[in-house]
Image 1 (tube, rainbow, N blue to C red):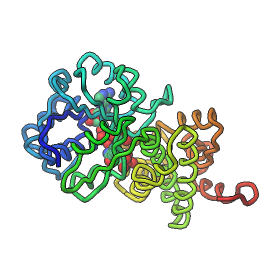
Image 2: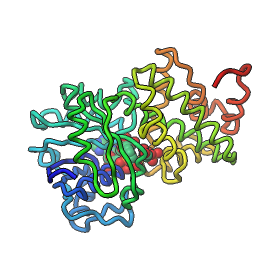
Image 3: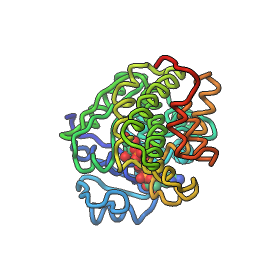
Image 4: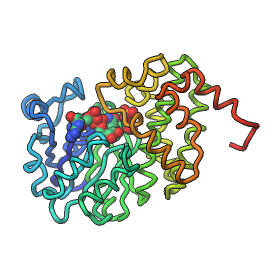
Amino acid sequence: MSSAQRAVVLGSGSWGTTFAKVLADAGHEVTIWARRPEVANEINESHRNTGYLPGIDLPRNLRATPDLVEAVSGQHFVFVSVPAQTARELAVQLAPLIDDDAVVVSLMKGVERSSGLRMSEVLEGVLELPTDRIAVASGPNIALEIAKEQPTAIVVASDSEVTAVSVAKLARNGYLKSFVNVDVIGTEFGGVLKNLIAIAVGIVDGVGYGENTKASVMTRGLAEISDFAVAMGAQASTMIGLAGLGDLIATCESPLSRNFTAGRLLGQGYVYDDVVAQMQQTAEGLRSVGAILELAERHGVDMPIAKQIDDVLHGRMSPADLAPHLATDDGPSGE
Ligand SMILES: NC(=O)c1ccc[n+]([C@@H]2O[C@H](COP(=O)([O-])OP(=O)(O)OC[C@H]3O[C@@H](n4cnc5c(N)ncnc54)[C@H](O)[C@@H]3O)[C@@H](O)[C@H]2O)c1
Ligand SMILES: O=P(O)(O)OC[C@H](O)CO
């Protein structure tokens, strides 16, 4: 464990609050920025965030504020955990506030719908930071499990290994072990793309198909998202690491996953708008699929599962046809 430092986490939803708890449990002095003052008050007064982490007691060295200026002032480590589609507007507010030497870390797992940019690209562009002051963290990290202090691993990536190590040293404690790599593209896309496959697995689960179907979708899904990530510049090895295969397994198998849950509702026959209305929390995959398909087309990558998710989302395909379609493709081909 490193010596005590200061850090701020922007976003007080499930992951922002959990990650702040991870840092505070490592002995650091942690501030969490909550957009809603009532959430900040609850964290400060009751040491709880019941809307997102029911039953979890938060550490006392974790304090919250709804004031972004106060939250960010003098902070060297700034972690960002808001829904991907809101990252740009937050970054615009953040730009004049961050310290000259601050390291900014994305905890998010979506792409910007309008541009197809990864979150680190959005932050880097708006904040005008060199890439050695940007990092991303990803892995099999279902928030509530980590908040319950169940043992977990995470990977921190930055173009600069020094930066990745400095962040990974900060974000480790008795229940979270951090690893590092320098493949930002793979680490980030791993987190984005597993969400799509978790939606597909949720769909077939909702339809009532069993383990063979889910395993087929997961395995072919891993091949599909690896092809995409490598075409975008990722290392193939990252896709079988924590941010790829690791997160794919956790998200596709957990009833706590919002992406899996959204898929299951689709499989049970709910339409897209009903699913969005029922989700209390962010299911990033629903908003990433269109942008990923556009990038895939531009880079000549075939993504049959992602296409089928998009067809189900837009009512062009019955959920029950998703997996059979996989099996009735043209003649046999190599795995
Ligand atoms: N929950 C997890 O298990 C988990 C784990 C790893 C990564 N992530 C990623 O972390 C990111 C955040 O997810 P989450 O689970 O905390 O989501 P969440 O839905 O639980 O919480 C989102 C938070 O963002 C706030 N927010 C909403 N709109 C905002 C805006 N315009 N400006 C600022 N804040 C706004 C909400 O008030 C809430 O506090 C996502 O990209 C997600 O994929 C989540
Ligand atoms: O709840 P989900 O589907 O957003 O998944 C949460 C995390 O990304 C799992 O690592």
